[in-house]
Image (cartoon, rainbow, N blue to C red; front, side, top):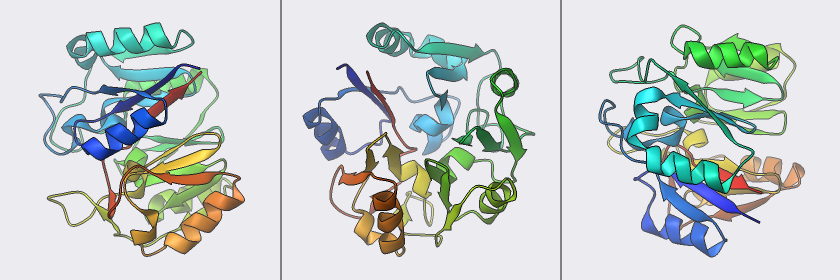
Length: 239
């Protein structure tokens, strides 16, 4: 099996080593020169993923040509779409690829998402829903159809289309120099595992999140010790 992890430069060395010990070849995403720290290396800001398709900006594709070429050569089922208008700081121009998909639904700030991304969603019968939160991909994660988030707008939009939700408290995730980060930026979900950047037990709603993960039939694997850290998520490819 070919296993690859796309992670940002902010992933602690212990997390990279843990992923490597689990059989992943780790590829470090270059920092985007037109984005401000800390989102300049965040996967959920740089790349949108749905199933076997990735969407990013043309500038970033060229900047990261070696990385994307290597990824596509390792995983032949992947396709990469490039929007001529790339992400850039300040907010909200940095959220063009920042959205979350759950059970055929896409949630994001429709006023600022990539036109190419939205066209792709329409072509692939994704039901698109506007939320005020620009960093929707950072702010939530899905366990099958269950949406876990501290963002009230995302939770409300999910509930309105009949998706079960797991509301959690704000905080419990680090994102220096900001007061706190987002839960979606601290986890990656596969078919059988939820990988966490830090110990889930440090989150104020750890018991409820852990119970939901267990109920979904998955196990929890921390990549390193200490509190949860928002690294902008990380993309895992197993085939």
